[in-house]
Image 1 (cartoon, rainbow, N blue to C red):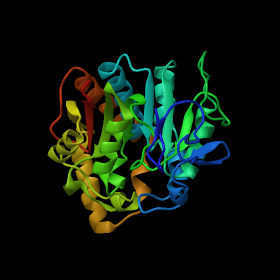
Image 2: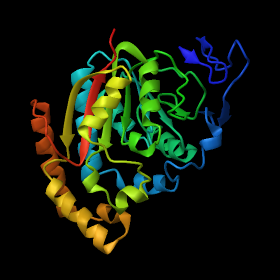
Image 3: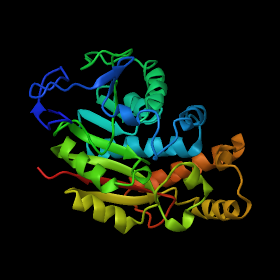
Amino acid sequence: MKRCLRCHNEFAGESWTCPSCGFAPSADDGLMLFAPELASENAGFSEGYFAELAKREKGHFWFEARNELLIWALGRYFPDAKSFLEIGCGTGFVLSGLHEAYPSLDLWGSEIFVEGLRFAAARLSNLSPHANSSSVHRSPFTVHRLLQMDARRIPFIEEYDVIGAFDVLEHIEEDESVLAEMFRAVVPGGGILITVPQHRWLWSSVDEYSFHKRRYSRRELVDQVRKAGFRVIRITSFVSSVLPLMLASRWRKRKNKPEPLSEFELSKTVNAALLKTLRMENVLIRSGLSFPAGGSLLLVASKPK
């Protein structure tokens, strides 16, 4: 069900024009713009960062291991999901992985920056289409639905089986509002997948460069998710096995202030070793082990029926 962001009327159908007040979102090259005033600049991120991400995500140990963990978590905890929305989809790296793993899943992505959506559109348009896909709005691709949107104002009511926000909440001051909107937009019996950076004592220039507002504690994240109305199913730290290396790197950065993107500059040998380590860690998480500490948190929660 759609929700008009002007008058809050709920309506169905393919058209985005509100039958009550006549409001309709604007469009840019086939992309629906629900928050055009924030599409190029806001305090939560920098649109220039997407070009760097697009070059570095594929093959990087952290992004690859996180994708594998998310693909598993979606299938493990929401095996019957038919629709999925990723909030803050960036360059589409997670969506492309989900499409390869679950080709029949109806995937949607949202991003505050149009620049990020353009990278995502290019990446996703190269993927094979679903056999019976259809699009609510016309865009350069037919499989994936990309929306420019402020996560604090989601234009849907009980629309998606699962909503994901992967390293997004830490960019938004009003993270509790985002969780409340996610609760409104997910169907009863559905749920959410969330990842966030963990431990305030890991704060460094990387967080500052990435426009982070905070790093979370486990209790803080659980309390906010429950306050929004969700029931927590699983929470675990990840990037746990390399936490000592992360801590050493962050403390060194506090002293020497190197370039924030230096964490991406790894030799192929080191990157391969770290990816192997995190894949072994993922095996333990899939077996039921929940790590008490780590660079990041994964939370799975459901909306009561």
